[in-house]
Image (cartoon, rainbow, N blue to C red; front, side, top):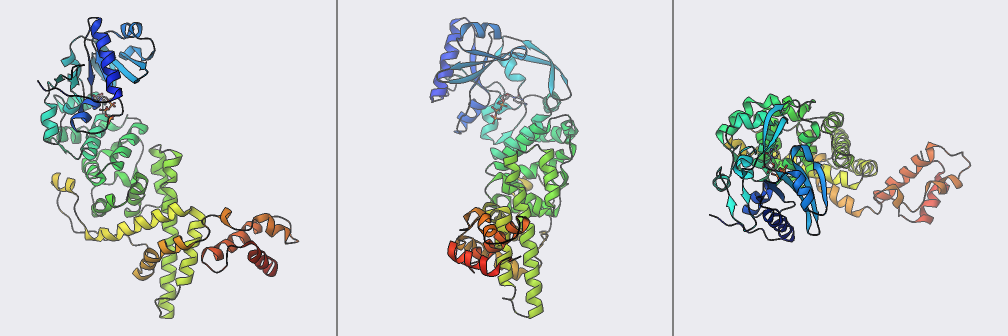
Length: 463
Ligand SMILES: Nc1ccn([C@@H]2O[C@H](COP(=O)(O)OP(=O)(O)OP(=O)(O)O)[C@@H](O)[C@H]2O)c(=O)n1
């Protein structure tokens, strides 16, 4: 019998709870994700405990207990070492809407409790001495890098449709395959996703996208076709497999954050910022998450338009360098409008997209035995490579050289402009301020109050 040592203060606290329950003549184990992650040598953020004791008993035995979900058998025990969900062993009877058990029956057999869980790697338990219970071969599947349901996959997915997305997420984050039977059931039952709350869909997709191999996760998602059945339309994210997807997945891991990865998916699909916003809203992304995506797309669109204009100017004047000053101005304008972070993000996405023409196949695509397709042409908004390349090459240098990054960095304020003029306040003040900001940003004026006030007085209204 394998012994598994969970070493942390959190685990010490869990063992204290387990021993206290055992002293009352009941069984208790650490279960689920903490066991899986210990075997995988991954960090543990929480420890769930399963017990044969009834929730009311647990409430009696511990000092600080929150009755989190009494009817489902869950209470939260708070100790100085941590906070633990303690759930009575249970069997779930009948399911409503592919997501909620119609009834819960408390039981005393730990194996029966493990049997109702989603995947074999999540159906292991460890007692206070570190003895591992693994009745469904979770370790074997972990060693084989395989996500496999406990028992019949169709039953497990019919009980809770979110488990289908969990399977895809675990395959992505833990860089695993999906067992054949589990995959077949998932594809067969994918329409069951419809009643699942979009918040839960978001959680899984976000984790999958933030993981070490987002292309792997998205290859599974797209190949499964499951997102077409989400409660609300996910537009380009739900598009079937295509050369565009192939291009997107070839480069998805080249940008670091989940926000930029979502932005990249939108860009490669040629989605507008409005479409991307509709997807963000459908997925109930937070304001902060949206702020990491939408300004990037808007900055990208503005830069692409500027690159196109610069290319047109270059073609008209027959010199590649023509329009470069205008390009730099447009670049500064994008920084002013969307912020430095968004512009850097847009450049990073653009850089990644250029690499996509190599058309590499992500490993998971091959594993899912998809027909290899010809490398896709990306939608190049910057039709002319020269100006687009200038942006990519010079953009970071221009940014680093900018003495101002936002309007408030300017050495003068709107009221200075107002005081130097006879005109009543109005939108012209900000327009003038922005005009001067751009000149400072491109190095045409120093960011010094006296020099700028001279410009204001001489030029008066610069709009
Ligand atoms: N739809 C679900 C969700 C959870 N579980 C079970 O409940 C445990 C705890 O679930 P949760 O905390 O949501 O996930 P973890 O497996 O701990 O993993 P993570 O924290 O990475 O989501 C899982 O391990 C699994 O045994 C399940 O059977 N079906």
